[in-house]
Image (cartoon, rainbow, N blue to C red; front, side):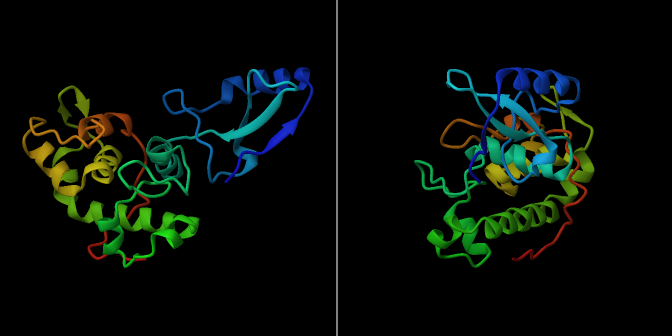
Length: 209
């Protein structure tokens, strides 16, 4: 989704920004730009642009929407058409092997189909929640390497590294830490995405689209 630009006087911008200051929700200082209605948005002034241009970026809470948009922001800045240097695809940066689990073989169609990408993300979360059910029950609330383990952190880490790597991390009490090709590891995701409400996600063994 493209940013919506609206030209408004500077005084209006400042009034609106300060009026919303106390009610603004952010995730570790980051604003997520996708899939939320304008009514839930905050105004952001783009510096260095004359005349001033305002774009609206939704605030995120700890709901499932907040969770998936925060993951998307970290993975791709929420860009459905993005293909990274390693060939990972879309808003949630799916690998081609993972997509095959859901019978998705046409990557061009996948990149041009936001609805399909959202369904694929949900299906992967459902499958990972089923595969990691025992680990979730055993480890919620525990501290590993100073990080409080939460369900949302586990699911985000599984999105990064796969359920198997998350099991190894938890069963080794944080000694076996998988990192991807860019150096991002499961422990980082455990911490970064902790505390979201992912009860909306149901564990489904053979989740499909």
